Image 1 (cartoon, rainbow, N blue to C red):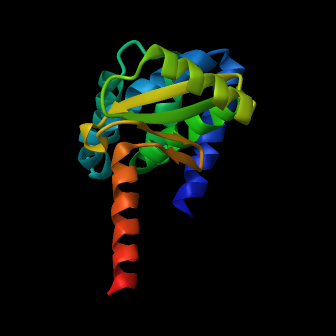
Image 2: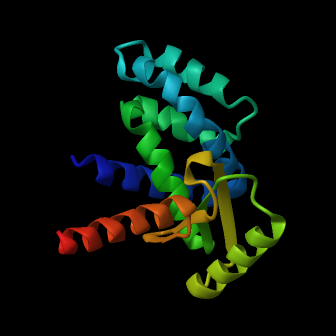
Image 3: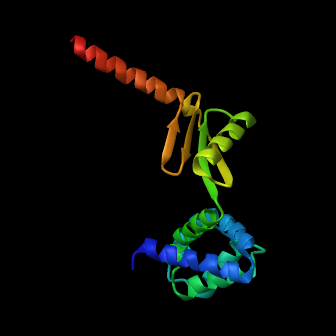
Length: 180
């Protein structure tokens, strides 16, 4: 079966089960905690280690998780889908956000982003996407020199100084090739 289809089916199942249990926010919170914790566990999760050990490891990754999330993890282990847990949780988070009108944007800046910039980008994003909530993940990357790179869904606005220098360099090379 296609890995993306598995992730989507399990993600949908978690969304429906958490709603049935009345633990939607808790499951979403737990999935956000678990997702980055999975990277160092991937080797163990894909190995033939006993299911009980895998479950114990997953429980330690998110202490105090809700009952619905624990039930879901047990289901994943029982059906031997732990190798796909990262994709499943990503799919679940996408479903959760979509049903609640949450948009995640990624902002890359050379230095710390000002609150005014964040407010302006949030308002523009809400206006253009119709989202109720906008989450902006900020990354600092001095290599862009100045300005910013803003990504929302499949759209990208590159207003970085690095890109502007690259564009100038390319234009200069093209113009000088015509002369020679």
